Length: 279
Image 1 (tube, rainbow, N blue to C red):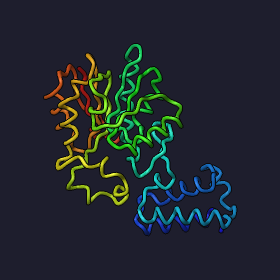
Image 2: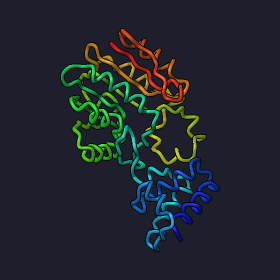
Image 3: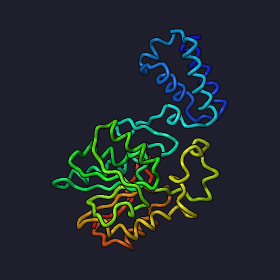
Image 4: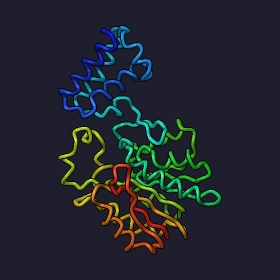
């Protein structure tokens, strides 16, 4: 069997299984398993696949056809031009979250000295570690209630060669009375009644990172109530939100923080994806 033969067969099987991106996922599996680039895969498509390679390809294809996200199968995801290790203990980094990082980065770079950044609900560390890489003068702290998630973040920190302080705890409980120039967070925000109806791939991700309570706003309420105790004068907070949640989260921040500026930011799809407030 050639690479081209396997790709065609894999694409057909993934289409039949309901995979939303069968061509892309088949190619990603082949690139990873065969250790080839996209260009090599294209120009060496007539190369034969040996028995051991075929066994590995089929094992990965079985997992993807069963609905497991390709990022968990490959063990990595790309985000902000960086590669992050991911496991089922952490949410898979998504392009939507890059809007949050880009705006927090602008804020950090506008500050003098070594601004302090807090990444709440850090998961894989994609927010805080991306900012540590792109704003190397920043003093970065990552927190998560999950020890397993912090283990993944720690491995990513070492792989990326950046520095950050990792602390376990429930939201601000992890940082005591510390204050920060910038707080950034992508907290759980899926309304609990909607969890069962999500795309099957999402069911493989940790419920802890998805469940935002009955209306999806539980974590935003808790963050808004205490964020002021952890922001320095002139500090800012940036929160990723789910579709249709921006106005409610903005109202929570305005109700609890002495904002000099607050608003929402749209992602590349025109969806209000980030809510921010500046003190």
